[in-house]
Image (tube, rainbow, N blue to C red; front, side, top):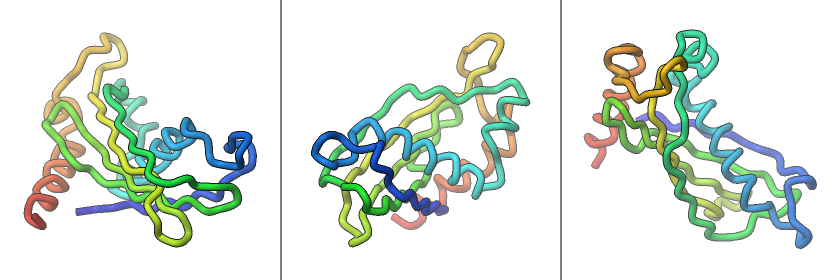
Length: 144
């Protein structure tokens, strides 16, 4: 099972009046982690879009466990938690420099064609991605 580990240096502009990272920022960091994860597997959103495919978010679930404050560093672990051939669910754990969990969550995406914006089977339109994602999910199951 592949996990990407992305490090983000927090910026003051990402905080609220209390110096705490604003809750909306974590979704952006999940996207950064997901992009890093996909690239680690040898793929890219850019190539996907050039192939006429998009991967919109259909569900977001984030649990805020502990405040992350400026100027702490955010450590984002990202992995594929589920894959059905149409939907991919990515999981995230965001920790601080002390290794304390600040946020846990998932985002779910479907692959659609850019022209029709309707869900399509990754096996049909992106067979290599499908193969790798199937292997990732099987690897996760084998570890359980």
